[in-house]
Image (tube, rainbow, N blue to C red; front, side):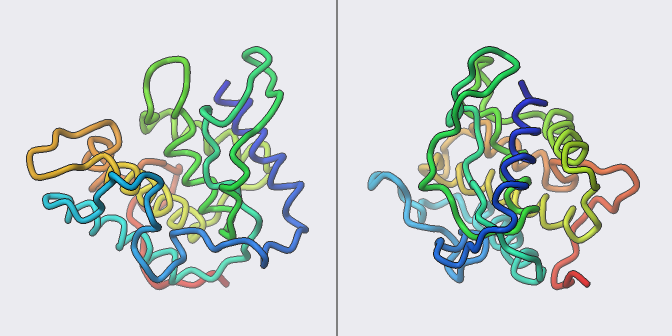
Length: 210
């Protein structure tokens, strides 16, 4: 199912790559504000104790803001919660099209790598580092081209932001125990979620794509 989902995202990219995304809202990773308004009014994005989450998201935004990349009509919630499967090998529908936003391909894939297991039948909401890396490997294979060094940094920054965004939604105060998102965010503080063979493990802010 992971391979099917990754290949479907690559096919989606091939479909939208020639479309004009200018009428879509920009992805949260590219906005001036740190967080978009939450989807539920009970979520407090200023709850104390979550400042470290804010810092991770701000660092991810800085990397993405400094990377000049083409933007496309990106599905920013490519998760199993928004997919209907006929069986383990076939997708019948992708849902949640209000998640269509302007973002780079690397941002879209990084967010998907961090969140694609959400809503899965296996109970886990966040993939392991191996699973997230395998998802990106399968996407690259279907894409027919590997991500370059800058795309890799942006991809992992987008994964960081995704984990931080959902983790911040779940944080309710200093004594709030870690959920899967915040636990994974802590575990990836020194090593990115997605690993690439032969690549530098840490992103570099402010570099532009040539």
